[in-house]
Length: 265
Image (cartoon, rainbow, N blue to C red):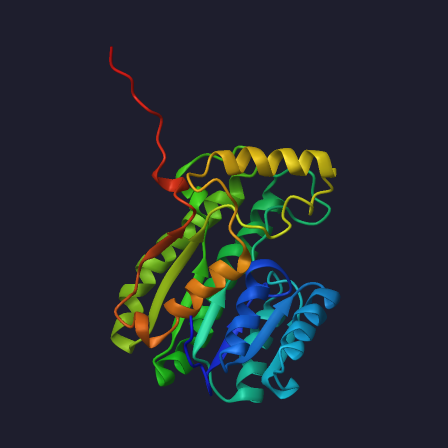
């Protein structure tokens, strides 16, 4: 998809890998100035290098490092973007966490606080901080949700609860922000090749089996790649989607339409 973002400024949290990284590269290739973010210095550098390798000038890239549970990092994302680029056109709340580093119990209150700080509170904080600038540019916000919101995830309950919260956040804020000319929508991906299965030390045989099992549940019988999701964001953030707000867009290979078959004798 070819959409011109020349002169526009896009902030993408969690853009040191996966979907966020693919989005940062695509928006930059489409002419945007991009603020990239991540917890890993190496990951941020990798994203920046990929953008530079695409022939994008260094002065169109700004990076912010740190965990989104840290308010100073959230403040830096907005203030440094304005200082460097002078405006904000698109805010993409992509970063997410499921388990606090060093925490073993996914249902501990410490993990609850961490997951909601990173997945929910950061999105609300950044949205509120960006409103004055987005109102000037008639910009928009995209939150990355999850198509699994409608099923149970007992092994990681706070993660999926937080993603469901993001969907309600988008619907409510669509009504709040519409009078200001600001749109907000959620992109809800299905299984996507982001390296999430390797993040927790799974052995290669187990990863291959899990990927195969998950793909078998998807009508299209495959995983998405991050670049596919980035294309949807490019459209959702553009003037071509100017009548779209408060919506949850499922991009899941048909996974969300599945239901057990009922057989009648």
